[in-house]
Amino acid sequence: MKSVKAKIAIIIACCLLIAGCVLAIVFATKNDDANSQTLPAKGVWWWSVTQPDEEYLNFAKENGVNEIYYSNSAFDEQVNEFISKANQFGIKVFFLCGEYQWIQNPADFEEVVEQYQTYQNNFENKFSGIHLDVEPHQSPEWSGADQSTREQIVTDYLGFVRSATQNQKFSDISFDFDIPFWFDDYVVDFQGERKEAFKFVIDFADRVFVMSYRDEATRIFDSVKNELLYAKDQNATLFFCVETAQSSEGDDITFFEEGKAVMNAELETLAQLITNECGQDFVNYGISIHHMRTWFDLKD
Image (cartoon, rainbow, N blue to C red; front, top):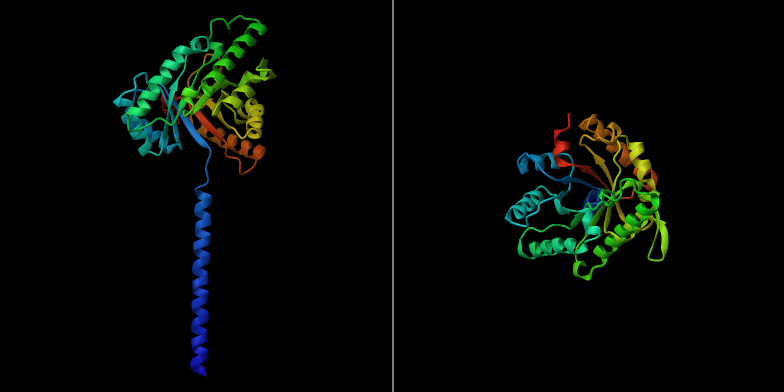
């Protein structure tokens, strides 16, 4: 009888052990799934640089950067090598380009995109998309123009955005667009609709980057809140962007005076403000920093 009871006890113990192992595996799997959840992106513009690529890339990786907007006029082996290095750091690379003249001369833009496509077809390490810094307010016609003229320039810009994103020759390309935070001041008629200019860009673009250049989290958030809510409603991806270069427009535009530690703290606060507004599960946003060299050189 004792032998039977002992066997039963052993069987029960084994069953409990197996059940415990199964629960541990399930729990670990859930944790892995949670940890692998898509996180908000953090990017940086990579214009002209002075340090070796590896020094900047190490800095970018240490600061949580997972994508770079890389400016290089030549589609060559140097670009191929740079993308390879960045990818080894777990960082995607987007081709950065833009001229305000493209708004009126889209053929020049198309020529650049065709060069991009040639590179993509012939080199091993690929760009993840094209990041367009085409700013209508850089037009010489903008300065001193009345509201009506500026609205027309903005409307022409929207025509460029639509043309770029709906061109069948470029249908396999992801397009980012930089826009100023004050695009909600321009309500325009376009394709039979009348609404704020930023809404049209969000409708057309793959991702939109709002140049919310301020040095306080609350002011950054407030300047982009309208765009954020519209992007959330459209299930679109929106980036909040900050400046690190010295600015002639005022000290409150940039983190140049405050330095890295202050900027990092404000960006953490900004992320919390976004979460408070949109919920814990909202990850359709990113934060990007302009630009690599000036950020690297900021005081600690």
